[in-house]
Length: 122
Image 1 (cartoon, rainbow, N blue to C red):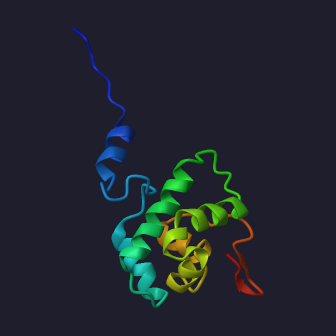
Image 2: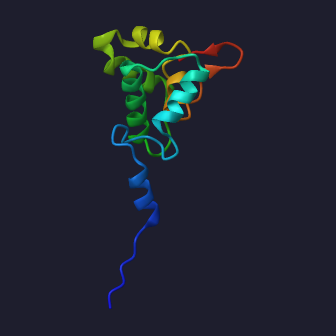
């Protein structure tokens, strides 16, 4: 008799994924983002969700956990250049597209994204 084994973590991980957010952290849901947005006094729009997906995708492509602030900032500017780049992203995320965006996306912002004495810098 052949006994099959299953990786319960892989099965659970796949079941927990929201198809609209394939790169989201396991504990994150859109409802979590909505709750954080409410605390931040933001109403999430289609544009916000696009940035959240982009952040989650960027972090997923850096599984070693090393995300450099400047590279992420530049990647966001390039990806959203057509709609106004960073200028538009700062309108969407007044707390900073990296600092506040990562918070909404369930990610840890890279070092230097905010300065406790100054606020968001990215």
